[in-house]
Amino acid sequence: SDDINVDQGWELTYDTDVLGISDIEKNNTINIFPNPAQDKIQIISEETPLTAIEIINIQGQVIHRGKIDFKRNLEVDISSFSSGMYFVRLTNSMNLISIQKIILNK
Image 1 (cartoon, helix red, strand yellow):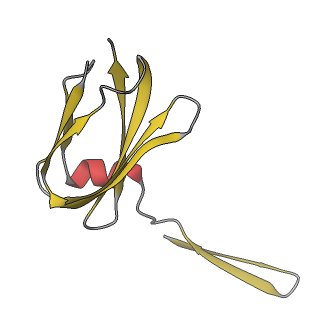
Image 2: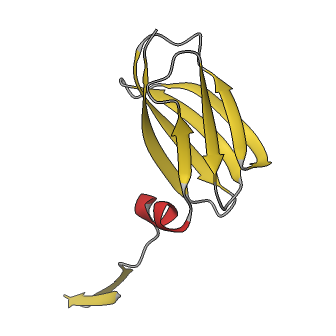
């Protein structure tokens, strides 16, 4: 919904109906398995093709970045990563983003 605030001659209009992370999860189921993982993860997007992936460590550093050619199924080699928690940030063909947590146990 749009809200309008008028104060001292200024008018500010803003839209609170913005697409966010939860919107992709409502419209598209993305599964990452196994979780916890050891050396590879499978990513399956049930409806919308994926276009990009980032894997982010717990310090917020992007340690893997790649473009995906509109695939729904993807295998990612994570064998070079240290054990720990990571976030997988996926972008789909509608530019919606999903962030999921994975655990790597070696």
